[in-house]
Amino acid sequence: MLETTSPACPMDKEPRVTQLAEKGATDATGQVEPSPEEFQARIRPFADYHEFRSWMEQLVSLYIRAYEGMEQYAYRGRRKIYKYIYWLYRGDPELFLVAWSPEGRPVGFISAHRHWQDPDLGEVGNIHEMIVDPAFHGRGIGRRLFRTVLERLCQEHARVMLWVGAENRRAREMYERQGFREVVQYDEWVKMVKDCSSGSGSS
Image (cartoon, rainbow, N blue to C red; front, side, top):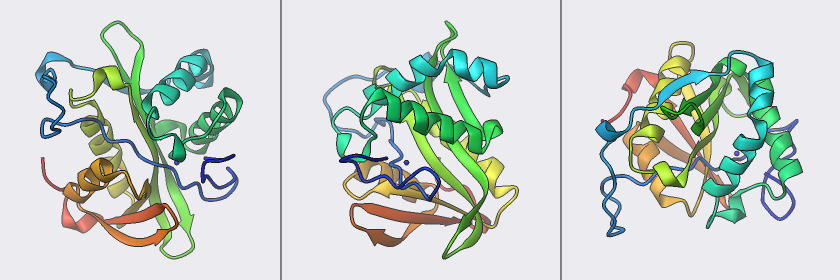
């Protein structure tokens, strides 16, 4: 999961993109969050490129909202965000999954690329980005997106990797619960890997 003052690599190289974890029930914010049962998002990929393009402006706005307070890990400027989201989709359209509200608008998305060539691990599945609209945190959307993609990747690979911001403790802890382990840190980015034979982690 960036550029300018953010630490992203160029999009033709390996991006170190922060996955954002949504607020969970254990997040001590003092706010009462709706339970997952109160909101059932439909998860599906875009039907085709034309549908993807029709929602691009909303996806860019969603990305900006999700990274509020963590701008050090984000692309800056709508043009760069647009190019980044296009890069995510182009790399594996089937694994660009969107969570749709009952009203039919995107409230989150996740992007992964199958057959990613990592210089240390060889061919792996790579989860590049996960976004959940802050207005819909705490409703299980992020967990559903993540587990859906992880299951797909583990059907094809022995290992799955991702990069996460070093200061994003909430996300790192969520990935650890799903069986990921930290293997190396480069500057403000931590590389995490899951052995798919270890199962899908905690519920």
